[in-house]
Image (cartoon, rainbow, N blue to C red; front, side, top):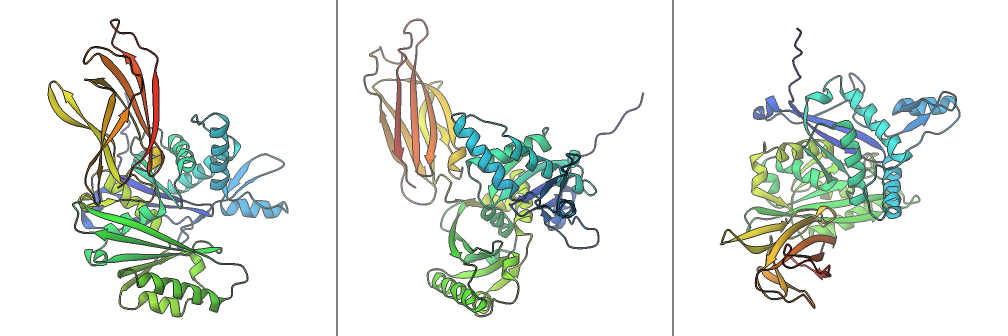
Amino acid sequence: MLFTRLPEKKYLLGIDLTDRFCQLSYLNTRRLAAGIDPHTFSYVTGREEFSIPAAAFRNPQTGAWTYGNEAYQRAADHGQEPLTHLLALAAGEMQQDESAQGGANTQGGESIQILLGFMQYCVSLLSVEVRAEEIEAVTFTTAVMDRSHARVFKVIADTLYPALDKISFEEHLKSFYHYVLMQDEEQRRQSILLVDGWSDAEIVLQSLSFNKKTRPIVCFPDERRLRISNDTDAAEKDRILFHTVKEWMQEKEFSAAYLTGDALGGGWMKDALNLICRGRRAFQGDTLYSKGAAYSTMAACGLASRADKYFYLSSDALRCNVGMQCLKKGRPVYQALLDAGTEWYDAASQIDIILEEGDEIILQQTPVDSGSPREIAVKLENMPQRPRATTRLRVRLSMTAADRMRIEAEDMGFGEIFPSSGMKWEQEIAING
């Protein structure tokens, strides 16, 4: 009998997928102790070609799909243009399907299948260095990770890595945060500036600031967007960026600055570049997000002890923990329901409770950055009157926005003694923190 040895899972993967390209960076878990930076895959041997063009073309004669640079070549051969903006098309299709199906989860349609084909192409290219069965965990990153994008990435992850349970999704700025977290501490002495020039239509200025008075240290991201019109010349663009950065520097101190994106090239940054680099360490790199996603995977696997000392609080995340005090086996315990740091569109929980007395559910909200805990009382109008501790409720919590929570309660009765009344209550409240 022949025995085949299964490949060892030893790679942590970060995938940056945008409307323009896909980048793949990975870490070898055997070399983490050596402090080796993530390696970004180049799809052209011997050259630094990291960004696989996000394009697809279907041969009108054979129906066969090609992707990346080959899609551009085959499209040109037929006097046509390839399909681009694959991620935007897939996210838009997912959003339409969700609306049509009342928010139900969906695998999407043609656009998502085209994007899946492109991602399978990217993973097949990567297989010359890292095979899918050798990957232990993956983090996907993109510019904006909202509900529709997250569901698109979930479909991709389930298709590419069906056997993995260590899969996560995040926005570019959070990936940058994980990248910065793995650099020397001096960079985090004050705020960190990021200049993102991956679009010709706008320059995105982002910052990471750290509240070192809290434990763990809370990191607050911030963002400013500069619209750049087609008729803006180089000198005017330099002036706009210079004055915006100068204004921001009057509000906060920056100890380090990073620049990324091909729209920052061409030599037009003169005064702005001098200002950004003056008195602080400055770095340029076009693989920050995929490398940051690889570091994020490392942290998610518990392999980055430094990450335990910090807490990232994005604008889309809950800024407080929500739970309730319960009795378990006669002992008071705190039952966590929603965790601070979770993106609002992913935050949800359900719990069955026995209401001791009264007609209120008491929730506890605890901010992670500042302020004191507060109680949230949810009154259940016209609740059936029963003896003490004979009302079982099913409580569901979800978020409708980063600062608004929906509370749903359903009377489940108490066995055969007190059948359910079928009553339901729903309330939406603002939460702060």
